[in-house]
Image (cartoon, rainbow, N blue to C red; front, side, top):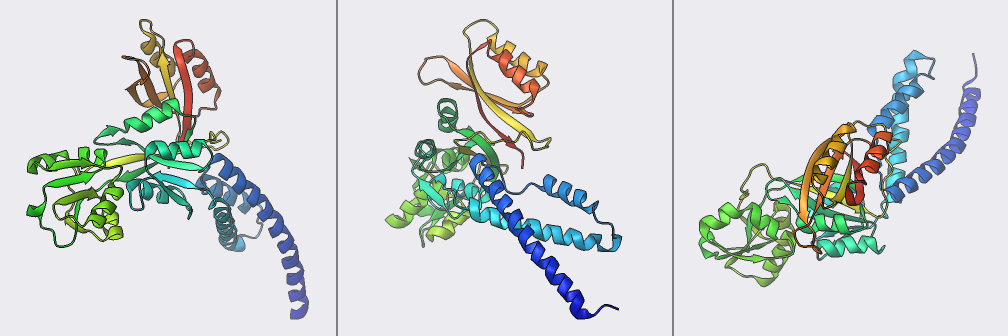
Length: 362
């Protein structure tokens, strides 16, 4: 029987080799993280991790240690993800509003970074990424009750950034007041126009005056600072905690199914071509030529190439009266040959056509 010292010496040699291999692996992980940061790709890819585990298991010849190898490789991947997060955490993610706003909540959900930056408006946030001040902008594009966020749709059409992720945030609007305020004291409500629209039934029922603000959290912050007793704000419960306001009434939304879709915008089109997923989507914005049937022909082209439209919306163009651009989300891989053929065919009938982004349903 081998001496325990000799066995441990062999283990020490293997551990030393593993240290060298660990360094090499982490150097490659760093390159992966930098690539993901540049292309705004999520760190976690469950499908790839599962494939890697199953592939590597086939190299293990001793059945009884296979479960231990699964634990081992999962721990290795966990360390790798944490290392990637430490590298990517340098991303500067800008949102519209102040801490506690729904955009802030979306930014926290989408990116694990301490660098969350507040901005005063959708346009300011968007342009700060265009000019390189920030890396990512988190902006709302659609609410399940109130519809499109028109200003952001216009930025998608006219701006240079690309959508790279979509996040749904369930919206629960509450009526917030300063301490000691009763419902009968209130004659005015302030909040973002979207929140006001989403609570219009409640507002109209009591005939409150309306004051619009740039976002829900900013309205709450101003209310706390003012100390006003006749004004209430529509905002989230998180905002109430953050600014020390009381929740007078909960869930005053017109609809109990109230969700806002937030998009992440970056200067780089994300590269999802090599990711095997059935949940790929891409976005195009376009104008059609001023000729009969041009829009119908564009829609036929999309269908003829085997693509399903998740939605199609129109927006008036600011520069031309009675002219519209179209925003279309399409299920599928924008990098495949069918998509490339479709884009070429669409260009025949479009005055302007832009691929505005792609993302994977999370």
